[in-house]
Length: 266
Image: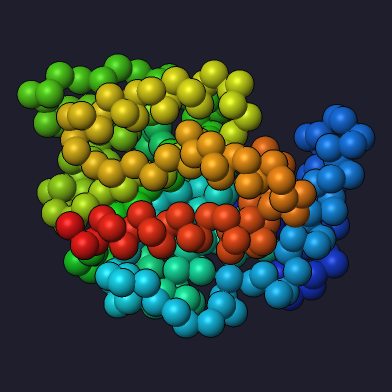
């Protein structure tokens, strides 16, 4: 399942998609200079020449043929890139077999329709597939939707997590993946404004949870090289969180290729 606001329009109609994303920028970006920059990125950064689905096959190491689950929201979808993302690049270039469940605007915490936990159980589990790797996006939506961060449980606690909190949901995902697939688990963080204190708190908690659950982290939030490259490329992002096709292909995909290949080699 792959659903975003952009998914409600015809993605084959490039101008309609650009108009939709431009209208979103008009709503959320106040500074005229920033608005102009993002609108240019929407058009030029999403040129067909950057479509990750059209990358030439050049598989890296351990990736070809691996069945990989992806659980996330708009950044996993590629909501700023005509619903294409690094996942499509890994499929086209590195020949992974992706099982993607991503819905724009959804949260880790909670059991409402389309939350991470609901889709974990109702979409990814019923596929009856043995995954080689499970990848989860650290949601950028929990804070703005009023979800409580919650508490990290003791190392001895292996169940009974508060699924209505973000940390409780992360712990639930950890134990669920361990019990159902026994495969490596990866959380990846997202580029947000470095002054975003809510996301910083989630990051701090994620590293504490790593000590308990021993999952991997692909930390884009803390990747200063990526931040510098993004700042120097005006076509890489359509806002402070969502990459364009160019951003995914040039900046994000090489990071995921390197990190995932190293994880799968271990």
